[in-house]
Length: 469
Image 1 (tube, rainbow, N blue to C red):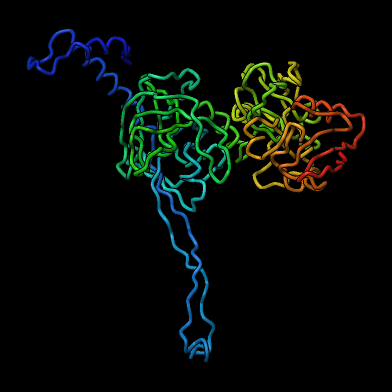
Image 2 (spheres, rainbow, N blue to C red):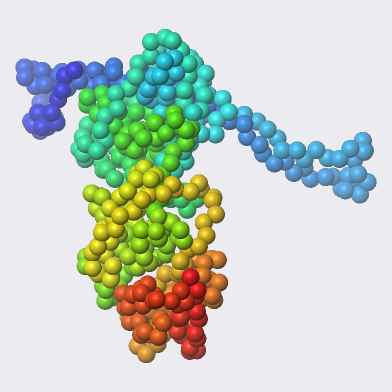
């Protein structure tokens, strides 16, 4: 397959003049024709491995029929009760999928969870017009991926999956799918950014990052392929950012490397398992004293789940996690992604800053609980911050009131049960004065007793509140 370098094309375009009416000739035409031939080759390789998915979902809509005044007083003339049963109807949708594997007569197609995850019936149409009935193998809302299979002994083309870790900003790419029902559509563009985060949906962070591209993506492209100039799939087209619902050059694709392990797990068990640490975390809080970290970055551990891999390995509240194996952790989302990518049961090296000093802790990753599972035993179940000048001014506090204030209390945690409240000012922990975050967490973590005693100031009143771990 022919290859083109972007650096060869740009000087050519830079030399064109809009005022010139002379047609291109010679080397200029040869370069453009070679580039055009490469695009044709990529389209020719990719179109046959991208399918159209027609999905049918049964939807129930509750019905509340308001009775007439006559019925309200005298009942229905036929004596029967009013039928308020929900109405059921079929909702149809169109999406795309990528043929990624064959096992005997079973063909596997990768798509998005929001395309096929709730479908009752799936129909697949190949580029050459052949149609098959699909079966949902597995779906995962955490990465918005699903795997569908169909059966045939006929020849079926299989996509070549590339290495999305090699994708860089500026790479030329093509998006292939079935936007707005226009089957087998190809658009081209470039990689605009990598490592993008998706907006939170229902307060849930997606367990994947995204490749951003200006190749046009619209409704129906979901589940289709984002391919490089070699015709290798590097992403699964998933969503767009748009105020109108149409493409404005902000399309996002799941990196294919994030899907490779999911494909194996869908086939083996029908679900995806993620690594789990067992901490309540956020980005490091602003700290005037900067007492917990030597430099900015990392993920801050506010609380640890009882019996979790983190607790068993010795990770403590107040630790700042800065590295997992060879992956640097810049913020809490980085930690979520890095831990989720760990195979449950594998051991990983975590670098943490504890009271400003680095140390290495080896953790055996657990299995991330199913969404909605009950998680109990969060210790201590609160977050604290140092009181800045701005906080002191807004709350009309004096320097004598204290330096550490409670931010959030997790419901049903030990802190909540004990009666601690958001806005309480902590002045002492186990009798020790606390002026910085390092003071607070050191006094709490290094106690030899299971009972932690907080002295707090609330509405000009000093209180003593104890927590038992």
